[in-house]
Amino acid sequence: MIRAERLAFRYPDGTPALDGVTLTIAAGEFVALIGQNGAGKTTLAKCLAGLLRPTHGRVVVGGIDTAAKGVMKALVRRIGYVFQNPDHQLFNTRVYDEISYGPKNLGVPERERDAVVREVAAVAGVRPELFSEHPFFLSKGLRQRVAIASTLAIRPQVIVVDEPTTGQDYRQSIDVMEFLTRLWRQQGHTIIIVTHEMPIVAAYAQRVIALCRGRVLADGPTREVFAQPDLLAQTFVKPPQVTRLARAWAGAGVRADALTVDELVDEVVRVAGGERAVAVPRAGRQEPPAGPGAQADA
Image 1 (tube, rainbow, N blue to C red):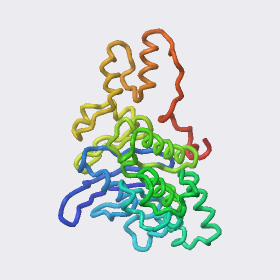
Image 2 (image 1 turned 30 degrees about the vertical axis):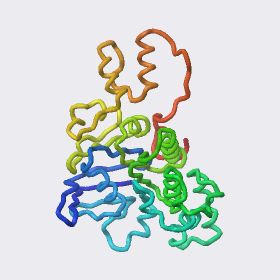
Image 3 (image 1 turned 90 degrees about the vertical axis):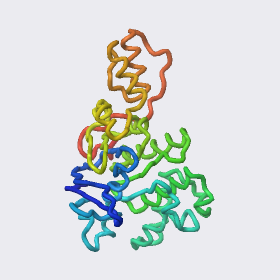
């Protein structure tokens, strides 16, 4: 779905942000970009989405070279970007107009456009009674949902969300991530998130790309990347506390790469030879369905 080849980017003031990044992202992956401030996460995400053109190298999304002329109309149907601050992309005076803006500019007929707006609003959790409201009168969480709905309305195959949990409380953060997970598992979207929240990465991301000074430091399954704390320390990233605790208990026979509290509890119970006193619903991380495109059929 996405291929970056020797990608480099330098800002107009001369600041280098990316240096020779080469990677591929397959259709149906759920990927987290992590790293310290200034590591190049957002710059990489914007280059992948075609919002920034590489200084050197190239990015190809769904067969489209993002630097080619006249490709934006086709590119927006491949990949959509949700900014860290939704206020940076909301500009209409009604929620309905905000969500319908993309399809309208792509020439979607009015009746079909209305059906699209109502469908994606329902998917994003934006209630119809909010359609006449000004987006800026809504809570941060709802403004983000409107921004996501406006992106979904264009029907992109890939959705990039920069810091999906910033400004949200714990419950709102879980709601946003569960929503993105439904898009991944049920709608078949490729999801890319940029985040500093390692517990969120551990609970939801299938794959992690760790950046340091504009280069890829580590790239692999979340469990494998978080099992390398010394490597991650180079970009000032610490695995989740539960993973560090599991490593500390590894000498007692506990599996050292637990990613969630549920996993660690199961390990402790297993080692102790007991049973859980209370069964709790599992949320967040699940193994993806097998086979290409299987997320859409899950």
